[in-house]
Image (cartoon, rainbow, N blue to C red):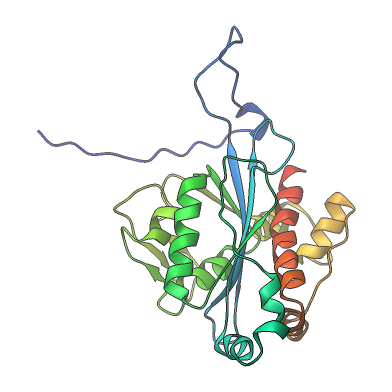
Length: 252
């Protein structure tokens, strides 16, 4: 006897997809929809630099969890070794992260890229979002996967991005197509807005101002690098703000 499985995707109005409490007459055991906004920045060489996420759970007003991951570069680590007391990175503390509690955003820092990406993947798996919301999907996934554009099956990053344990996550460099993320809906915010709205500017800051009437500074790469070097905590907060901006636009 041969057994096979298939993944079924259904298009439906978002207002119709909601969880009903069990105590209601029409109650069901369907869990609330969990939406995770993910923002990833790469350095000039295309390698992972910083990531931030914000989780929104249906029916809850405040974000369910917020976290930031920062890879400390060699020059930043060397500066700290020369003058530990005068290094601004000392102000960005690593704290134990518990997503089951309502608490402030946590910042995780490491000099080791594989360990940091493993921790990020494990956290994404733990948060177990139904919708992964990204402003620019190819750019985000490229920042996570690096030059190889691949997360091997069974790796922490592959398990965090998708729900199928045996799937590897790939990014096709030329087309920007992402494959292997099964069990989660990956939503490309920029692409969707471009399809549905005619705007002059589709940058994240412009979209936030247009849909939510909220400001978001648009910093060029040089300004971001300077902010990271001089004020790492402010830099981390800016990346988190970008993830939260995607959530705010998506809710509109």
